[in-house]
Image (cartoon, rainbow over all chains, first blue to last red):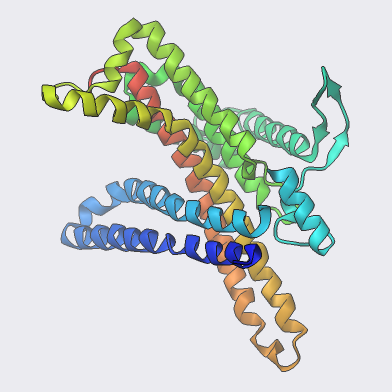
Length: 75
Length: 262
């Protein structure tokens, strides 16, 4: 296969990893919301944990985006 | 890696590619024992950031009063925010690490935020900077853990009340997860800043492309609005990543302070 074409295909494939992050973020915010609607008074105290979880989850998607960017620009 | 990235971007389209903003420019060339220790725009931004943080804290606390004015309450807010984080994650015994965590948090936060200034340089988008910070944290964890607990520090790799048959599986997993901490800590911060800034640049590029594409120019406000929204998200990410860096530092320090208690 043409190496340049393979590079672009690889970059596209690397981005598929972000689907996992999308699912994870959906679960994260969905669960938070369902918990927060059941007990709104306890929700404010958990906002820090929510944002921490958001940042940790989002970072994993960024890792696969990073691989795609490295394939596109650095290799 | 980034010398390569910068050269590719500069060569491909005259230094205006999405990667060109991360290029290191040598301001004062310095050679030390055969190493390239030049003063670059990265060093200049780090000094600017440190100066800005120190100046801010000095000015904010210059006329202390019981009822704080605006600047003083901002400084107190940051202080108590970090102090609460350390106390919750490490406990009272960890408060001796408060200066370390506070410096790391405010340094990374200021670097991230100053990187959001248009035309600025994002120091934390270079893995060598974040890797140095992460190795500092892990080095302190190992050295302090060994000093405080001696060989008992290695109980970290064997959680208490594990069934005997699990021990040969648990130890390699725990060692691997410990060794991957500096990597994940540094790559998380660096990749977030790098990817965020590249995404901003690419979306901003769409505006220009659409404006010069004849009738398609009426669609140009859409990527412009997206760029504005992304900028807001990037400010959130800039704060969150500094916070995550500080929290994970606290969690790792907790292992050193309370080894074998988890």
